[in-house]
Each structure stands twice: as C-alpha cells, then as structure tokens.
Image 1 (tube, one colour):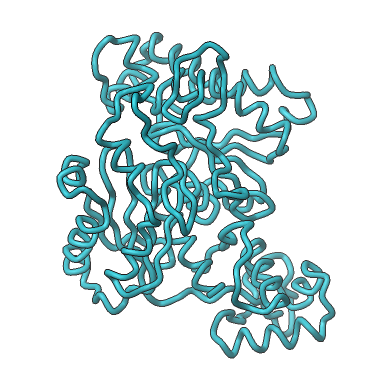
Image 2 (cartoon, rainbow, N blue to C red):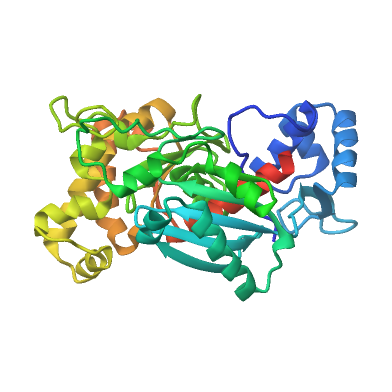
Length: 406
C-alpha cells in the first residue's frame, strides 16, 4: 500500500525541474490527490500540472488509480482518479548505529523488514569502523532473506551523533586533555569522517546516504508510525541517546549544517559539568546520554532498560517518580522548542513502551507550565509506534524520497 512520503530535507538539491519538484513535494506531503487538488495545492495552472503529471507518469515516478473511499467518490458513474507516488520495487540496505552496537537490515520500500541482524559494539571496536562489519553482516541477511545483491536500490547509514551529510561526523574534535574520558564509542563515532556513505556506496555499488539517527527516527514515525498525517511535529529520542528530529511542513528539517535538533547540547545549567562538545551544563551532561543513564544513579548499579519496564509494569513508585522527573527536565527544554516552532505534536521514542506514560506526564507538566496557553495546550503528546525499528524504517523513507528526487 502506498505510504505518504516525507521530503528528505530543507536542503537544495539538483535533479527534477522546479515544477516537477513542487508536484512531487505535494504528493509526499498529502498522499493520493486528484489532478485538480494537486493544482490547488501547488498553485500551478492546470495545464502546467497536466504536462508535468504526464511526464512523471511516463517516467514511472507517479501512478494514477481510481480513488478509494475518501468521501470524494461519487455514488454513481465513473470514480475520479487520484495520483500518488509509485513505490520502487527493490530493497534498501540499512546500517543503523546505536550506542550499544549496530542494527543491519534489508527492507522493501513498503516498510517490510525482510531481515535483520545486530552487531555488538565490541565487534565494531575491533574492526575500527562500521562499514566493513556492516557489509559482511548484510551479505548474510541477503542470503537468509532470499534477496539478490543486485536487487538493492540504495543504502542508508544512521549515526547516533551530530552529523553533516556529505562531510561526516560533526562531533567536536577529541581534545587533550579531554573534559571527560575518551571512550571507544566516542572515538568510533568521531572518526566517521569523511561521510561513511561514500565507502558504503562504493562497496555495494548503489547510491548511499547517511543521516543522524533522530532524523531517521522522525522520518520513520512520519511515514510509517505515529506521525502519519501530522505535518509539523518534534520527534524526541530518549532511550538510546537524547536528540530531536524535526518534521516541519511535512519535510525533515536539518538546518544549515545538518545539526538541527541537537537537544542534548542545549545548556540547562551555567555551572554544570563540562560536556564533550566543549560546552558546560548541557542537557546531556546533566541527565545522561540515555534513559538508563538517568536512572542508574538512583540504583547505584548498572540498570538494563528491560528491568526499568518490569518495574514500571509492577507499579514501582520510585521508578515512576524518576521517569516523571526526567520528563519534566527534558520537557522544560521542549517547552522552548514549542514556543519557537509551534508544532502540532511531540512524538516520543517508541522504545519507552510502558515507561512512556509517567515520562509523558512529566513532559506535559513542563510544557503547560512553561509555554503560553495557546501554544502548550495545542501540542499533542504521542507515543511512538515503531520502537527500535524507527530508524530502520526512517532509512527506508529517506531512501524512497531520495530515489524519487534523483
């Protein structure tokens, strides 16, 4: 079934002539529409729309089909026809880095994951990189899934760190002496320069791209999850790292250098601890870089997130208080984001699962307390639907949009 495709970004790129790009963007943002509706959405003359649509139909980029029951079909006579983006027939290879390893997957453009295997972080450390181990694991997945390597249309890498497409990791250079211990994980992520998509594309022989993990998760929820039909929302990643992905006017917004949404590096304490970014009192350095890091000080021992979910399910009042307080702390920063961007919704990391309810209660309290009523009350808080598959499916959405634009 055709899915609403969100445009890849606010960045300019070459390719289709301007009118074609305008029509494609409208189809991504609104899904199946009639030719008349498309003319209204784009403010282009109907004759111009007709000519561009015919070219896109001939190229196989757009399909035309009878309207489903959308309240517009007449009760008698020939049903109207609607235009929609065509789904590519091939597959997407995905290498999704996390703070604990890498998820390697193959998926079709309709969002069906055909195979997935994970690589622990120590394997990546031993290899000194991510592309080599990822390609080897990908070969195993292709065999298991019965997919020929020649069926891959493109590949995407997700990076859990500040990232500039085409250049690579935008993490602050490791300085000596460092304000905090230089972990293997940080060294690995900071070393993703130049853009690892270049090597991945060369290895696989297909177009490849890379993006920040929160951006990919936002795209995943926009196309396949809780953000469907929401043109303006903030996606909050909080379980495996803290960050934000922004969907504005139906498109992923990256900012001038690709660094929009680095919520972890918003300063929340003037005299707070030093952060690896070079700043002081960043949200990350105060609450930790993941939800588990938020919780561990209270237990004075390592805590697995599965244990957190079990405690929430058991109604443990302590864990619920900690989650609610964490929601207030992060929600205070989100409140300022809401004042600046006026989003329709905040979609919160689906990996929270049962822990979402107390966390969201804290976020709601902070937003209502620190925003004008006409802004805060209009923001819906939505639990993500995709869990740890959000980045993988976001990679599929990104690949589909970029394939159309190519």
